[in-house]
Amino acid sequence: MAEFVYRPVIRTALTAFRLLDLRIGIEGADRVPRTGGAVLVANHVSYLDFVFAGLAALPSGRLVRFMAKKEVFAHPVSGPLMRGMRHIPVDRSAGANAFQAAVRALEAGEVVGNFAEATISRSFTVKDIKNGPIRMAAEAGVPLIPVALWGGQRLWTKGRPRRLLQRHVPITILVGEPTHPAPGDDVAELTADLRRRMSALLDEAQRAYPEQPKGVWWQPAHLGGTAPTPEEAAALDAEGRRRKA
Image (cartoon, rainbow, N blue to C red; front, side, top):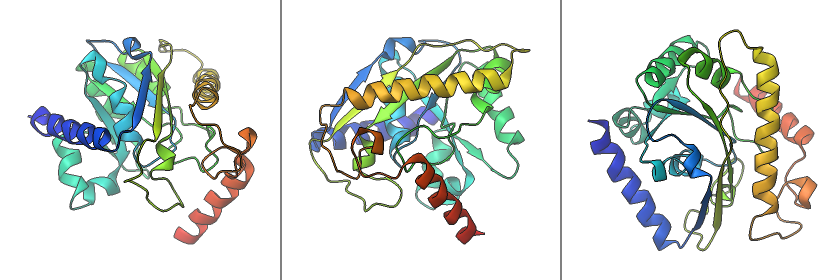
């Protein structure tokens, strides 16, 4: 039943991307298995990352069930769509239910998408990540596949006006080599290794991006952009949490 909702949503998104002439490049999509469970873990730079990460699995004929904060499911517009596509709600104050729901989906042969940073990175580098993707893949016995996303921040990201009608924006999607976490592995060590691999993959996407201007807000500081440094971004995030509290 979910596919009756999911596939029209994908067609609508792809049509919009064609009309906007977004230059979407996907590399490594063959690393997403055509059958069986898998965890896709992506960096997070844009509110559109769910769509772009999902495109990584389309060449393999797979639909990704994303883990997303429960507030998205409560929204009158996005909520019915998220439930219809069988995405997985996450209550950040009690994540055990979402974790088990994800494991069940993986064991049933689904591809589950996860943003291990939990929130958008204002610095456009990979922040500290959660160990949930490692633990899910180990418990379900499925591969863990990193994905780097770049370019979507130019359309819609945290702290910037939406520019959803901007045309000709390049979007890069890189799918990395899978790993196979197992029960009993050192989770902390694997999490640190995953962050290194995600950072390397994102750096590759950024350095190969078709446009390399200096002094623009959407480039990370280490590549000559004016985005906050990781330290500045962490301070902004902390201030946001204080205000929300």
